[in-house]
Image (cartoon, rainbow, N blue to C red):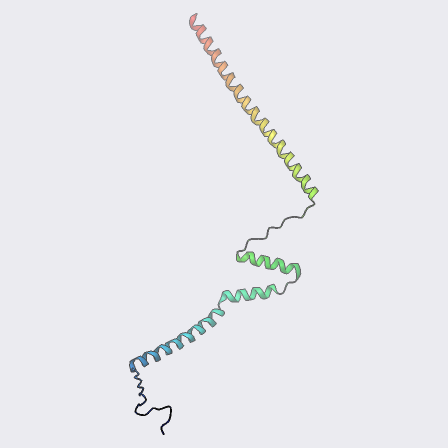
Length: 152
């Protein structure tokens, strides 16, 4: 008897694979180019690691590790400012009652300054008005003298 997998009178189809030689060459060249690029990027990365900017950064980090405590914090802060960061704004801690008194005193001083400035401005205005009126009076007196002398 015949085997159950192969039926009588039917043959299994033959599979023929055609490989185009020009495509094979392209694939080989593409793979070869990829390998070259990978090698060049690895070398480029190694070169980047040894650039002067990175070395400066590493040296400064090493220098910062020598400090301890507050000195280290100050050194790190100055290093960050050197890199372009904004300096930290520290607020003074103050007792609230003393803070209110200080603010009240500042307001009082400002009011006195404003009143003094206001008084000075008012005096200047009065002086200029008085000066104008005096000059007008003098002009009128001169005009009257001239008219009297002409009449005579």
